[in-house]
Image (cartoon, rainbow, N blue to C red; front, side):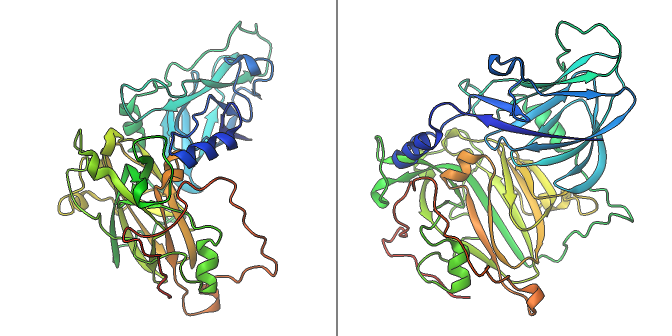
Amino acid sequence: MTICQTKRSLYSGNLKAEYDYDLTYGDDLPHSIGYTINGEPGDLCPCSKETTYRRVVDHGKTYLLRLVNSVVAADMFFAIAEHNLTIVGVDANYIKPITTSYIMISAGQTMDILLIANQTLGHYYIAARQFWSQGVGVTDFDQVNVTAIIEYRGNYTIPLSPSFPSTLPTYKDITAAIKFSNLFRSLASKDHPVNVPLNITTRMYVTLSISEIACENSTCTTLGGGEILATSANNISWNNPNPIDILLAYYRNISGVYTTDFPDQPLFYYNFTADDLPVAVATTEPGSKVKVLNYNEVVEVVFQGTNLMNGAGNHPMHLHGHSFYVVGSGYGNYNNETDPKTFNLVDPVEVNTFGVPKNGWLAIRFVANNPGVWFWHCHIDRHMTWGMAAVFIVKNGGTAETSIRKPPPYLPACKVPLESRVQNNDGPDGKENQTIFI
């Protein structure tokens, strides 16, 4: 039997109006005030005490739990009181089974989990809470515990309150998050083989940072100080073109929308994970820079977390259009001589979303065999909105089957639902970006 569960966020007020204001004036984006499981915050929250999601189970049966973290504002710890969980799949790929008393699911991740209903007849909480990986001293984040209830079928005295999972880690338990993230391995069996890319043709080293945009260099507005909050990848803060998007510009060969000079390396090097880095290093430039890949290009990307503006944290990176193998991860600054020797090229997990650890690095590999325009970004929505993102353009192969599909006869206009935080897309030299045709 399959149980589908989604976790989402709750916000107060007019969310779109608040987003528009914050994006226009460079303020922090709204924070959630709670989470839901299948649409309900749970009976620890007065608003849903009578409508908490409940699931009746039969003793001795095994249930497939499909878990989707659609919170997108946070990584989440998750547990079921007095029950172990066996994870058998991540992002629609089989893995070697992991039996655990809790999980940490990153924003945007999906997991397939087996739950054996083998405990004493009763009521048990399903519970989740945020994993906060940023400033240790920060306390003003969403600390709501979202719950649902498993109810065993049968004759027994209903408890006054369900059991709460004692194994659910605390909000800032980075040790629990690290331990869990290191468990994943592909099944790598005869029936489910892996094909880890070995002959790399493109290597990229991409820093992920909390940054600032100086408004004197862009037509943005600030509430004070002359800078607005931003995030960046290799010191480029992604600026989504408007009204023409990258896909349309690429397909129709429209100039002036994007450039093809996203850097393969950071613009400059420093001790990325040091404390109290100079604020000047955090200044970034907005841009619509893409990385062009040939069809069947074999790509390795090492994502490097930084501590700019003391903003180090976990960054769940998500790639559209492709899955990738996680061949390595570690802490501190990536060493391109010694760290590749530790790569797992035998049974690395294959996913489309995985976390770059706080003040650490993540190495991924994939084959660019899906022609088109593919967004990649941090799945923490505020980080993506501020600019921790970019685009891969995968060129066509030599056949119709390996070429980008034609648009439908009627392609509706895409209306941007939110205000743009930067009103132009000029480069740091003040010149309009120009497209290099492919």
